[in-house]
Image (cartoon, rainbow, N blue to C red; front, top):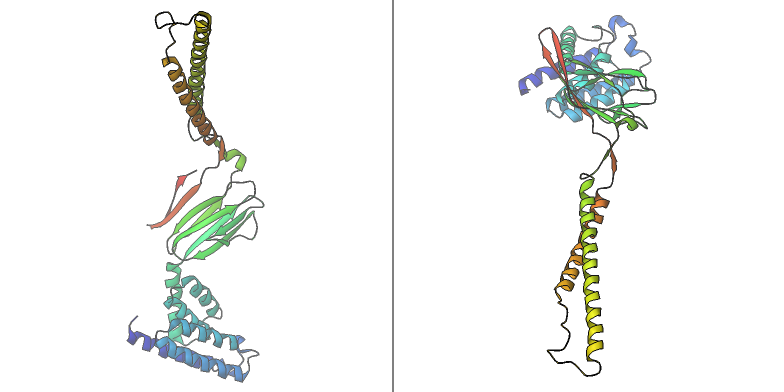
Length: 324
């Protein structure tokens, strides 16, 4: 907003405050009942301070000042000043709520030009704000919108006005799969989202990291290698024992020369046996680890739905997409 327009708007604010200072036709208006003259004077002074802050574009401080004035005197014109600040701060939903309250008495509390401006703001805000209607049928469920409770109790329904953009609708209930629905709202659109939850028991799946036969194959191969190595080692030991007996029988009395001594068994079988047993033990250990890592796990699917509302000729189009 340019500086000249702010100056014109500030004049309107002063007029609004001036209107607030007098009751129509000398009668006590509904918004002036039980309001003392001192409170009226204090409210007007705060409005003047708020006007100066607004012209300086210090909208947050102006909002605080007008809010203090409204606490002294709940005049619709003062509330309309709050609407102007909220619009400048991009807080459209709050501005719309305040504007509805400001217009509760119609045109009577305002100068004609300011009332026309209020009606223009109402139309503008109506095109900027989206409405999300939430519904649930399962008793005991909780429904939240952007992390805040949205429905007092289920079954039930609630229409909530929101800023355009992305919003998250979440349904929670003990024993049911939590569901999150993403709603992309467009200004002026009305979205309806019904939250239905699925029981955990029906959604659970038992999964493994790998096919169940793979760890058992490694484990079984290790057992086979270790067993075969053990048999080969036993065969080698038996051959050595037989050699020892032959040496004792032939050479214990007269001795044996190189030509007459029994031929010692080869050591290749024993080396191979040790190698096979080592590989088998390693495979057994690996298989055991794989079996542990591949143990069954119960998982629940992630459920995300996306609801997009876009304006089209003659209304709005609603599209829901995602995985369930």
